[in-house]
Image 1 (spheres, one colour):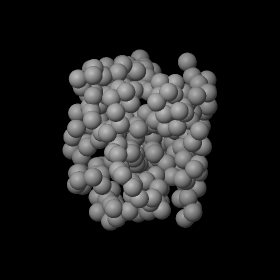
Image 2: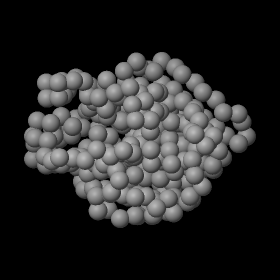
Image 3: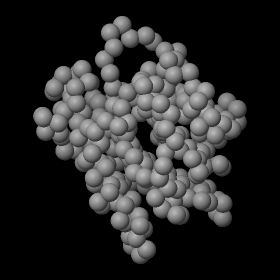
Length: 279
Protein backbone atom coordinates (compact mmCIF):
# COMPACT_ATOMS: atom_id res chain seq x y z
CA UNK A 1 0.00 0.00 0.00
CA UNK A 2 1.31 3.45 -0.86
CA UNK A 3 0.34 7.10 -1.07
CA UNK A 4 1.36 9.95 -3.37
CA UNK A 5 0.71 13.69 -3.63
CA UNK A 6 1.31 15.63 -6.85
CA UNK A 7 1.41 19.39 -7.23
CA UNK A 8 0.94 19.59 -10.99
CA UNK A 9 1.62 22.84 -12.89
CA UNK A 10 1.09 24.95 -9.78
CA UNK A 11 4.49 26.65 -9.99
CA UNK A 12 5.99 28.30 -13.05
CA UNK A 13 9.50 26.98 -12.41
CA UNK A 14 8.42 23.50 -11.23
CA UNK A 15 5.85 21.70 -13.41
CA UNK A 16 5.80 18.79 -10.95
CA UNK A 17 6.41 18.40 -7.24
CA UNK A 18 5.70 14.84 -6.05
CA UNK A 19 5.73 13.28 -2.58
CA UNK A 20 5.47 9.52 -2.14
CA UNK A 21 5.56 6.78 0.49
CA UNK A 22 6.14 3.20 -0.59
CA UNK A 23 4.71 0.57 1.77
CA UNK A 24 5.90 -3.02 1.35
CA UNK A 25 6.93 -6.19 3.18
CA UNK A 26 10.46 -5.78 4.48
CA UNK A 27 11.53 -9.18 3.20
CA UNK A 28 10.72 -8.25 -0.41
CA UNK A 29 14.09 -7.59 -2.10
CA UNK A 30 14.48 -3.99 -3.24
CA UNK A 31 17.24 -1.87 -4.72
CA UNK A 32 17.53 1.73 -3.62
CA UNK A 33 17.28 4.75 -5.92
CA UNK A 34 19.94 4.56 -8.63
CA UNK A 35 20.55 5.00 -12.35
CA UNK A 36 19.98 1.81 -14.31
CA UNK A 37 19.69 0.75 -17.91
CA UNK A 38 16.67 -0.88 -19.51
CA UNK A 39 17.00 -3.63 -22.16
CA UNK A 40 16.66 -1.09 -24.99
CA UNK A 41 19.56 0.95 -23.62
CA UNK A 42 17.41 3.68 -22.06
CA UNK A 43 18.75 4.91 -18.71
CA UNK A 44 16.31 5.74 -15.94
CA UNK A 45 16.48 6.95 -12.35
CA UNK A 46 14.40 4.78 -10.00
CA UNK A 47 14.35 2.32 -7.17
CA UNK A 48 13.82 -1.27 -8.23
CA UNK A 49 11.63 -4.13 -7.08
CA UNK A 50 14.32 -6.81 -7.24
CA UNK A 51 11.70 -9.58 -7.08
CA UNK A 52 9.52 -8.59 -10.05
CA UNK A 53 11.96 -6.26 -11.81
CA UNK A 54 9.79 -3.16 -12.08
CA UNK A 55 9.57 0.10 -10.17
CA UNK A 56 7.00 2.17 -8.30
CA UNK A 57 8.44 5.60 -9.17
CA UNK A 58 10.89 6.59 -11.89
CA UNK A 59 12.09 9.24 -14.31
CA UNK A 60 13.77 9.42 -17.70
CA UNK A 61 16.54 11.91 -16.86
CA UNK A 62 17.02 13.08 -20.45
CA UNK A 63 13.45 13.91 -21.46
CA UNK A 64 11.83 14.55 -18.08
CA UNK A 65 9.29 11.73 -18.47
CA UNK A 66 8.10 10.31 -15.15
CA UNK A 67 5.68 7.82 -13.71
CA UNK A 68 4.32 6.51 -10.41
CA UNK A 69 2.12 3.49 -9.72
CA UNK A 70 0.17 2.35 -6.67
CA UNK A 71 -1.54 -0.95 -5.94
CA UNK A 72 -5.35 -1.01 -5.79
CA UNK A 73 -6.56 -2.55 -2.53
CA UNK A 74 -9.16 -5.27 -2.99
CA UNK A 75 -9.94 -8.79 -1.87
CA UNK A 76 -10.55 -11.19 -4.76
CA UNK A 77 -11.35 -14.86 -4.26
CA UNK A 78 -9.34 -17.16 -6.55
CA UNK A 79 -7.33 -14.19 -7.74
CA UNK A 80 -5.54 -14.90 -11.04
CA UNK A 81 -1.76 -14.70 -11.27
CA UNK A 82 -0.66 -12.15 -13.87
CA UNK A 83 2.53 -12.71 -15.82
CA UNK A 84 3.44 -9.02 -16.00
CA UNK A 85 4.23 -6.91 -12.95
CA UNK A 86 2.44 -3.60 -12.56
CA UNK A 87 5.83 -1.99 -12.04
CA UNK A 88 6.69 -2.91 -15.62
CA UNK A 89 4.22 -0.27 -16.81
CA UNK A 90 6.53 2.48 -15.56
CA UNK A 91 9.50 0.91 -17.36
CA UNK A 92 7.53 0.52 -20.59
CA UNK A 93 6.49 4.16 -20.52
CA UNK A 94 9.94 5.51 -19.69
CA UNK A 95 11.63 3.38 -22.35
CA UNK A 96 9.34 4.43 -25.20
CA UNK A 97 8.44 7.54 -27.15
CA UNK A 98 4.70 7.55 -26.46
CA UNK A 99 3.06 10.70 -25.17
CA UNK A 100 1.48 10.13 -21.73
CA UNK A 101 -2.01 10.02 -23.26
CA UNK A 102 -1.03 7.72 -26.12
CA UNK A 103 0.68 5.29 -23.76
CA UNK A 104 -2.31 5.21 -21.43
CA UNK A 105 -4.65 4.41 -24.32
CA UNK A 106 -2.68 1.34 -25.42
CA UNK A 107 -2.41 -0.38 -22.00
CA UNK A 108 -4.16 -3.76 -21.91
CA UNK A 109 -5.84 -3.07 -18.56
CA UNK A 110 -7.14 -6.60 -17.73
CA UNK A 111 -3.61 -8.02 -17.91
CA UNK A 112 -2.57 -6.49 -14.57
CA UNK A 113 -3.47 -6.61 -10.92
CA UNK A 114 -5.38 -3.52 -9.78
CA UNK A 115 -3.46 -0.27 -9.98
CA UNK A 116 -3.59 3.52 -9.99
CA UNK A 117 -1.11 4.97 -12.49
CA UNK A 118 0.06 8.52 -13.16
CA UNK A 119 2.49 9.18 -16.02
CA UNK A 120 3.66 12.44 -17.49
CA UNK A 121 6.31 14.73 -18.89
CA UNK A 122 6.77 18.47 -18.48
CA UNK A 123 3.63 19.35 -20.47
CA UNK A 124 1.08 16.61 -19.82
CA UNK A 125 0.10 14.25 -17.00
CA UNK A 126 -2.41 11.40 -17.21
CA UNK A 127 -4.15 9.41 -14.47
CA UNK A 128 -5.90 6.07 -14.92
CA UNK A 129 -6.60 2.76 -13.24
CA UNK A 130 -7.94 -0.61 -14.32
CA UNK A 131 -10.84 -0.58 -11.87
CA UNK A 132 -13.26 1.67 -13.72
CA UNK A 133 -11.57 5.07 -13.58
CA UNK A 134 -11.09 6.12 -17.18
CA UNK A 135 -8.14 8.04 -18.57
CA UNK A 136 -7.99 11.53 -17.08
CA UNK A 137 -5.70 14.26 -18.41
CA UNK A 138 -4.81 16.25 -15.32
CA UNK A 139 -5.55 19.96 -15.12
CA UNK A 140 -3.27 21.98 -12.89
CA UNK A 141 -3.91 21.26 -9.24
CA UNK A 142 -3.06 19.20 -6.18
CA UNK A 143 -3.80 15.47 -6.47
CA UNK A 144 -3.54 12.82 -3.75
CA UNK A 145 -3.86 9.10 -4.46
CA UNK A 146 -3.65 5.95 -2.39
CA UNK A 147 -4.98 2.44 -2.91
CA UNK A 148 -8.64 3.16 -3.66
CA UNK A 149 -10.41 5.00 -6.45
CA UNK A 150 -8.74 8.35 -7.27
CA UNK A 151 -11.83 10.31 -6.24
CA UNK A 152 -12.34 8.42 -2.96
CA UNK A 153 -11.57 10.41 0.19
CA UNK A 154 -9.76 8.27 2.75
CA UNK A 155 -8.52 9.71 6.05
CA UNK A 156 -4.88 9.37 4.97
CA UNK A 157 -5.40 11.01 1.57
CA UNK A 158 -7.28 13.96 3.05
CA UNK A 159 -4.74 14.33 5.85
CA UNK A 160 -1.92 14.44 3.30
CA UNK A 161 -3.85 16.82 1.06
CA UNK A 162 -4.52 19.19 3.92
CA UNK A 163 -0.96 19.21 5.23
CA UNK A 164 0.55 19.70 1.77
CA UNK A 165 -1.85 22.56 1.03
CA UNK A 166 -1.36 24.30 4.37
CA UNK A 167 2.30 23.63 5.15
CA UNK A 168 4.11 22.89 1.89
CA UNK A 169 2.55 24.84 -0.97
CA UNK A 170 3.14 28.22 0.73
CA UNK A 171 6.85 27.38 1.02
CA UNK A 172 7.05 26.34 -2.63
CA UNK A 173 5.35 29.58 -3.64
CA UNK A 174 7.68 31.68 -1.49
CA UNK A 175 10.35 33.90 -2.97
CA UNK A 176 12.86 33.78 -0.13
CA UNK A 177 15.89 31.46 -0.34
CA UNK A 178 15.22 29.96 3.09
CA UNK A 179 11.74 28.92 2.03
CA UNK A 180 13.04 27.13 -1.04
CA UNK A 181 15.68 25.33 1.02
CA UNK A 182 13.28 24.41 3.82
CA UNK A 183 10.42 22.82 1.88
CA UNK A 184 12.02 19.39 1.44
CA UNK A 185 12.52 19.02 5.18
CA UNK A 186 8.87 19.91 5.67
CA UNK A 187 7.82 17.43 2.95
CA UNK A 188 9.71 14.55 4.56
CA UNK A 189 8.22 15.45 7.95
CA UNK A 190 4.71 15.36 6.47
CA UNK A 191 5.40 11.94 4.95
CA UNK A 192 6.23 10.60 8.44
CA UNK A 193 2.77 11.43 9.83
CA UNK A 194 1.63 8.21 11.54
CA UNK A 195 -1.74 9.39 12.89
CA UNK A 196 -4.40 6.72 12.38
CA UNK A 197 -7.97 7.35 11.31
CA UNK A 198 -10.88 7.46 13.74
CA UNK A 199 -12.81 4.18 13.59
CA UNK A 200 -15.76 5.98 11.99
CA UNK A 201 -13.57 7.10 9.07
CA UNK A 202 -12.06 3.75 8.11
CA UNK A 203 -12.65 2.45 4.58
CA UNK A 204 -14.08 -1.03 4.08
CA UNK A 205 -11.89 -2.81 1.56
CA UNK A 206 -12.41 -6.28 3.01
CA UNK A 207 -9.31 -6.48 5.20
CA UNK A 208 -11.04 -6.25 8.57
CA UNK A 209 -11.16 -3.32 10.97
CA UNK A 210 -7.81 -3.94 12.70
CA UNK A 211 -5.90 -4.06 9.44
CA UNK A 212 -7.80 -1.11 7.97
CA UNK A 213 -6.87 0.89 11.07
CA UNK A 214 -3.20 -0.09 10.87
CA UNK A 215 -3.06 0.99 7.22
CA UNK A 216 -4.98 4.24 7.70
CA UNK A 217 -2.04 6.60 8.28
CA UNK A 218 0.19 8.41 5.79
CA UNK A 219 3.23 6.69 7.32
CA UNK A 220 2.97 3.07 8.49
CA UNK A 221 5.51 1.98 11.14
CA UNK A 222 7.02 -1.36 10.16
CA UNK A 223 6.17 -3.02 13.50
CA UNK A 224 2.49 -2.05 13.51
CA UNK A 225 1.20 -5.08 11.58
CA UNK A 226 3.47 -7.78 13.03
CA UNK A 227 0.69 -9.65 14.82
CA UNK A 228 -1.87 -9.14 12.05
CA UNK A 229 0.32 -10.21 9.14
CA UNK A 230 2.95 -12.35 10.82
CA UNK A 231 5.77 -10.42 9.16
CA UNK A 232 7.19 -6.91 8.95
CA UNK A 233 5.28 -4.54 6.68
CA UNK A 234 5.16 -0.77 6.46
CA UNK A 235 6.65 2.36 4.92
CA UNK A 236 10.09 1.48 3.57
CA UNK A 237 10.98 4.63 1.63
CA UNK A 238 9.76 8.21 1.29
CA UNK A 239 10.50 10.01 -1.99
CA UNK A 240 10.47 13.55 -3.35
CA UNK A 241 10.58 14.29 -7.07
CA UNK A 242 10.81 17.80 -8.49
CA UNK A 243 10.71 18.39 -12.24
CA UNK A 244 11.93 21.76 -13.52
CA UNK A 245 12.18 23.09 -17.07
CA UNK A 246 15.88 22.23 -17.21
CA UNK A 247 16.18 19.10 -15.11
CA UNK A 248 15.00 17.28 -12.01
CA UNK A 249 15.81 16.59 -8.38
CA UNK A 250 14.92 13.24 -6.82
CA UNK A 251 15.47 12.19 -3.22
CA UNK A 252 14.74 8.87 -1.55
CA UNK A 253 14.75 8.52 2.23
CA UNK A 254 15.24 4.91 3.31
CA UNK A 255 13.57 4.39 6.66
CA UNK A 256 15.34 1.06 7.25
CA UNK A 257 18.94 2.27 7.22
CA UNK A 258 18.32 6.00 7.83
CA UNK A 259 19.93 7.30 4.65
CA UNK A 260 18.96 9.75 1.93
CA UNK A 261 19.97 9.26 -1.69
CA UNK A 262 19.76 12.32 -3.92
CA UNK A 263 20.14 12.37 -7.71
CA UNK A 264 19.90 15.62 -9.65
CA UNK A 265 20.31 16.66 -13.26
CA UNK A 266 20.32 20.01 -15.03
CA UNK A 267 21.12 20.82 -18.65
CA UNK A 268 23.54 23.44 -17.37
CA UNK A 269 25.42 21.01 -15.12
CA UNK A 270 26.40 17.38 -14.88
CA UNK A 271 24.29 14.79 -13.07
CA UNK A 272 25.20 14.21 -9.47
CA UNK A 273 24.47 11.58 -6.85
CA UNK A 274 24.76 12.06 -3.13
CA UNK A 275 24.14 9.56 -0.35
CA UNK A 276 24.03 10.99 3.15
CA UNK A 277 22.86 10.04 6.62
CA UNK A 278 19.33 11.23 7.24
CA UNK A 279 18.83 13.86 9.90
